[in-house]
Length: 199
Image (cartoon, rainbow, N blue to C red; front, top):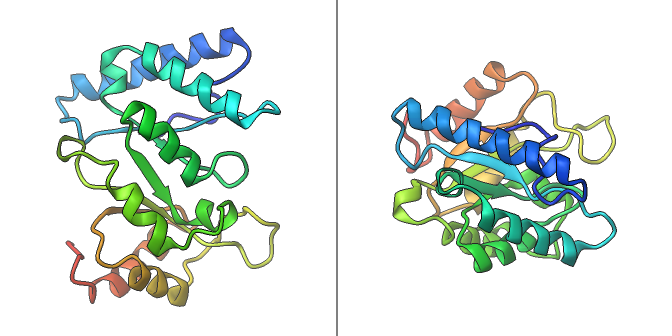
């Protein structure tokens, strides 16, 4: 599950934090009531910068530690394209043990020079066996829109290159592409030739 952008644990406004905590608990309770194992995750971005990245990371860590156990055992964090990088999320993992979702598009937009082949091994180790398999989000840049805009259609060449560069790591892949099923069919056709594919 991926709560919306209004769920901000590291917000400066404590009312936003309280609403975010309540919403995360609701999501965790839904997954529990469905009888799903701990591999059913709640995916969350780190939040806002508020002019101070270090303080923002610190607030996230402090508030994560105060969350109900039902939420903490299901929460995973994802980097974004403007504020917090995959390297920032790895810092949070070091302090909390929280698994990190890898988003290829976000990493393309915001990184510190790390190639996919460098960062993916580090991200993959954040997932314990009880967390299930590493989660990866995939998209590419829209060719006619500003930086950070998701593509409407899958770019077959770009997707093939990603599959090649992500070897040998196994993961669950989520496509974040506007035309959804059409691109999913193209991606499935390409991925069938990958030894990691399960269809």
